[in-house]
Image 1 (cartoon, helix red, strand yellow):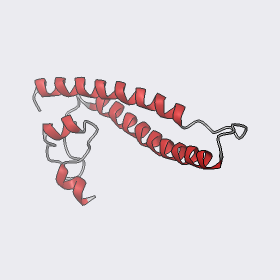
Image 2 (tube, helix red, strand yellow):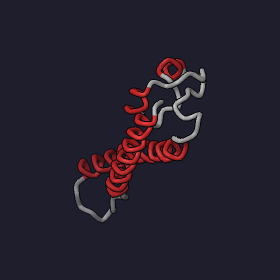
Image 3 (tube, one colour):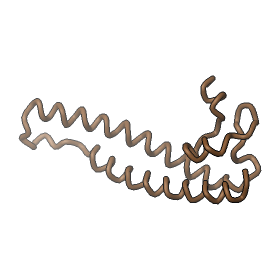
Length: 112
């Protein structure tokens, strides 16, 4: 990975971290408990509970992504960054630009 590619990737990771943090804030708000005293109707309450569950799953996923992005940002200047954790081959820069938190090349990710 060239220095230019590494700098582009750093910028991409920081932007993605900022976007993910905002997404987490929105999901935390959407996954707040539904107060039983709200008179929204039985069907609407069921919809609200279902939406809350979906928001909670998305929140868990966003938090995991944020953690992986922060780890990638810390490791970006190490020699092992961009090397597949399984086959030890370089991960293509295009994959890292698409998924900066990737630890595996496409082939190894498919085999997992």
